Image 1 (cartoon, one colour):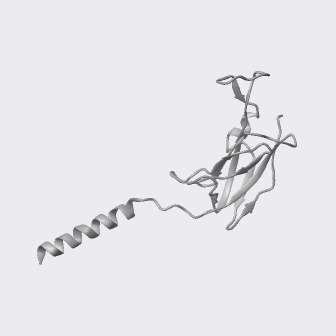
Image 2 (cartoon, helix red, strand yellow):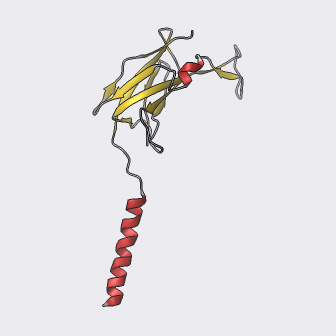
Image 3 (cartoon, helix red, strand yellow):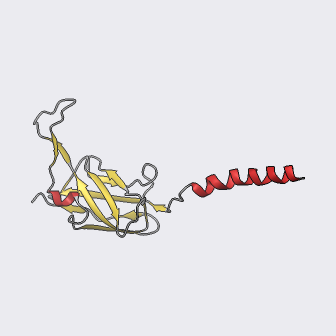
Length: 143
């Protein structure tokens, strides 16, 4: 009887401990937006959402813009979205410095002012609500 009880307790612990050790993901909601630089779509820009009041381990949802400057955020899986809340937003846009870039060209730099790469200075903000979120365009200036 003791052996059976021991086996049952051991089996229960092997099922419970891994489940407790996994960090629960916060629910995420679809987020879509657009980046405009000087009023024009920014192709291949990187957008990162930094949760206001984040604690260590909170995801920083991000996405890359398409040819028309549109992006979808990803937190845990491709295009899954972001958790509900307020965010400081950063945008970086790395472009080649050569007029005719070649494969393996490493002469790229962020062509946006440095303030847009820092969540404390970008002045770009967004709020994610439950459900699907279609954000107004993120307006970025080169000056």
